[in-house]
Length: 298
Image (tube, rainbow, N blue to C red):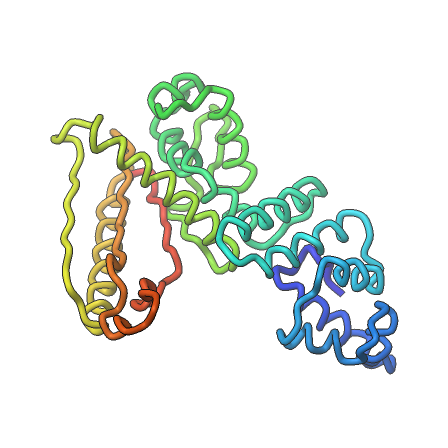
């Protein structure tokens, strides 16, 4: 059976543990008994999503499955990750899960992407380094700005090479291994993407006051929409972003690294829900946060 570190859903892990042993006459009753639970179907209900594991139950189940050491620590954080009620709590648990995996040199699907999108430094330096062949970390730091140090540039470059986002040739020059990077399919990667959106949003506010008008473009529109118009605008924005990516990657030259934020969100609740006690500001529906970085021509 796969290690618990290969999972991002503790219910799936418990189910797989049970399924592997079921052929040997292992039952839910036996499993519950091994974990010290009075109800013979408690763990089945957990796997079906009808029950949650309490902190005490986590320890009992882990012991029944013979989890120890770093696997036990990962299982605890995995439960916290799945039970988290908000993005911050989920991100905190995911950070701990990734740290455990990295410490024990275990590859987790999406872990590199999670770390990449966790900080604005990674996509920016991924663009700058190839455009500055032979540059020292301090030189890159000076061009990059935003308070980054030479040590942080060095650390970021090491990660980008190790994770395969950059390659380094015999002359010490950096090259992008792929022209674009997307968020992938790992379910916890969007948590890091949201953190990056917050970071980039803060930079946008700073640019509003400190970047000359001729070097930036800010525009916006407030509009009343129907659900159908909302979906149509999403398609237009998606096509627009693809066209911009095509223009950015049409050349291998880079003179400056830019950031484009596309923000489209409800300012009110749904009018149809006006009679409810609390406005439903999520009535338009939420898409998965998207994030891509261009190639060397960005």
